[in-house]
Image (cartoon, rainbow over all chains, first blue to last red):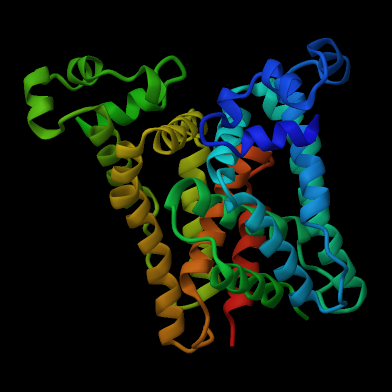
Length: 178
Length: 178
């Protein structure tokens, strides 16, 4: 059911706005009643679909080098954002989170919190190895990482490519370093 | 006319969505025809109003210390974003820029470009004084600065306060430093 939702979210003629519980049920071969037994509405289903996609596509074994680990992680995150029609769908979801307070709260408590925690885990591991200043604010660094990527995706429309991700990881690791 | 627009944009019962050319004309004591002689529509007027506000409220004399100058600049920018009803209005304008391609293009070519250039000017001055690595990517640093602030404003809803701005300036200056 999650994969059916992801397939539809990546289609230009569907996306987040066009997605219906009916279409996900049809594509995954389950009844609408079954779908609704797991998720009360489309918003919950879509956030769970992206949580499973992120857990599958973004996580990578840590090497122990902070810059390598952050760059790999942000690169994989960026790829999930710009692959296929994802940029448009992620933009729609971000807009929905800003416009609809209850969806925004759910988004903050699930997908956004988990994505942020994954970056904080990498930074915390670097701090434990002495690669990060003791007084550095890891939350600010996580905001700078996500914020810069979202800023390009939503507003500036500049490329989110390997050069950008490498520069962003270098900036943040340099800014945190002892 | 610009000040009349700003006054209305900061009102809870108006904001960007509720603003009309009629109301700006009434408040500033000019005819609608006069208003339309200067701006073809509300979007152009609002962007010019924010451009004038930013030029007036954000610019500060440079001290020659990169961290101080960046922190002062971002702090003044943050204050214009969170003062009165500005957070809601800036969110509405950001949403409009994402949803409406022609407004988005205008926003990128005017207000966003100027705000970005002001930060780049501070970073470039720091580089000329040898406080920034020669190979550092200043555009990435500007994206991290704006992105982190917008990320909190739009998505995480965490405070955009003096601690956050100081941490952000420290991260970026540290990441750029030689």
